[in-house]
Image (cartoon, rainbow, N blue to C red; front, side, top):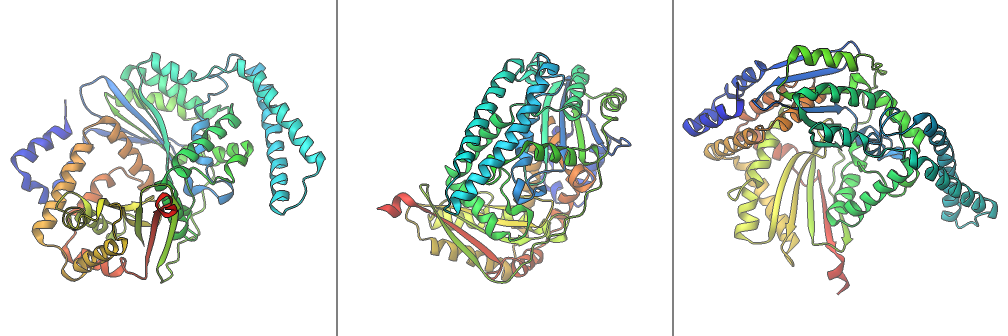
Length: 515
């Protein structure tokens, strides 16, 4: 059985210099291609299958081209909430008797939306300093009781987590999902002889979803936001940073939504969002492991061919305008001090993107990297520092960002000055050939280690197929990285990483400020 990664690890041991050869990733792509088959359905659904390994298991990933970037500010958080809701079952799964349950579900949807509207009216009056009419307060109380009663009547008919139970009985591992600015992903690993079980459950999830327990789950997301953002210094800094670094860009909105809007996300808007975005033409399935190409294609066609194709989406009209002038802000929070520094840049496959990938490693990957050496080891001003390219997403213009956790009491001005100094050195002097070679070798060896897992490979195959139209970009981006030269690093520092294009955010510890 072909084993892609161990072959490369053997090469790594005996011929490390091969990583510098231009055809290394072209060769790797060819070896992958020998084990991959792709096909598309008439409704637009794309499937990537890879036969790999000796274990009789499959990694099964479904991705949709929808995330926080696809929301208006009014419905921000809907993509993430919908991800939660699609684990609540269907007309066939998650219910003891849907005919009996449906009447309660429909009433909950109607009266829940009506209650949200009334609460929004109440909030608007209070914000303007006006008195809330007694009739409005009474109606809110009446509908709140009605909604609670309906939820209590529906609850005995709900079979909670039935999809999880079915998968557990069939040997699942890693049944999960995630939502980002760019995509929503559903994943699981199963024995290969359980493929049809998966196809039946997942196609049913798309054809007959029931957003039961909507208001309960909305409260869960509100609490999740409180824990991950409001109670987290890093979360507060990051959310504020996006809102300032991006002025009109879809990445400025938090994926989890706004605290003032989350309590009023409407179920009818969530259903409409599902119908608009969860369509087969915005969907990629990747299957990696002990896969039989003929049988798998037959099963996929059987269960997913009747998904209706969606309407063609309009291209994004808004493009972030880069106005010259530094943006700087401070947030105050009871957390340890932190800093973020970032610059707007173009996305992959723009030619400069590969240079930013190399630069992020040059600056912060490993003890010998420029900023690690200066700020952590020599000056001892920071506890940790890292750089990231393509933050917080890769579909559209994004950021090259530096994250700093200073030592307690460290001079933030000095830290910032050293960062600018190191960027200026790269702009003026570039990087030595040996340094570049070492960085590229490290990037490739890190890539190889991450690819020794069916789930990781399925995740990447579906991601690149969905965002860029071809899974082969996994390797093509590394081919571009291999071509990056010292002059390319100097160029991006000069063109992008300037003081009149920067956003700088600092978190001040309110506990120290109080003293």
